[in-house]
Length: 98
Ligand SMILES: [Zn+2]
Image (cartoon, rainbow, N blue to C red; front, side, top):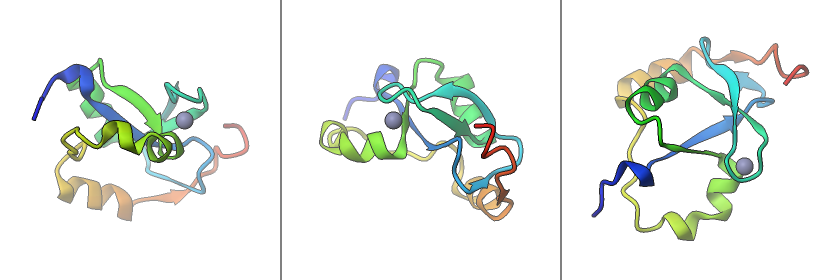
């Protein structure tokens, strides 16, 4: 299994999703549909480690799932950290703006 960083994909929620993890940023876009996404702190830390990671929204990832079949799927952070983020989700007050 190739671990080429060029193959890394960060799957993100769209910026207008109903819930948001505190500390998320809204400055990046899906590399396929160009819609604005939100990147939680765990994803931001992945991008610091792997700046070449391709950003995809969930819908584009699902539509292109076959293309990514061969890739090793990893979480952006430790599962415990992702669980903590998920539990900290709050309504997305930026939804209308995004
Ligand atoms: Zn997309």
